[in-house]
Length: 172
Ligand code: FEO
Image (tube, rainbow, N blue to C red; front, side, top):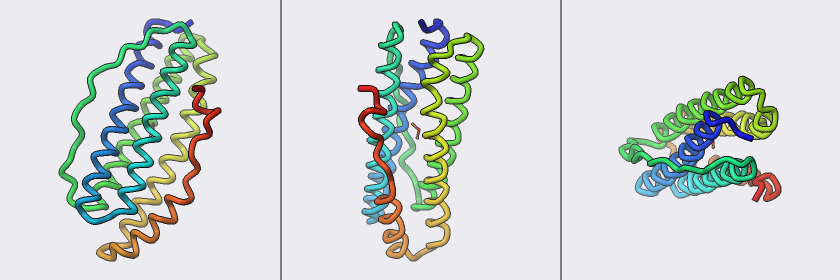
């Protein structure tokens, strides 16, 4: 059984995961305008993954007897000037997500809610992967400088190396 605080915080996180999806879709479109189609594909895939993160949490709230209440989703930024600006903003965003997941874990521990604590481990591990992948993207983008063609080749390899979330891990 979820505490009221835990239920509210999980609901807020679900809304935030949808916001992440929204943000990455916007970034993908900005990259499309820059003619960076591989990097656009990377962000489309990332947007889909964020939606899956939200759905996985919805499934958990429902299974745990909680009540799903979705919040409003803010409009994302859309004025990125370069691929590097997109990559750096993404890294900052993901660091924020990691902080939010850690705060959820702290709530679960304070509630002695060991089921939720255990469930959240998947998100902690996922954030380690996500931050590492985005850090690589920032480095590649910095190194490429104005060589956008070279950057697209490297991003294509990064995209192929991504492992999709297995269906059984989504809990749906
Ligand atoms: Fe759902 Fe990128 O964390």
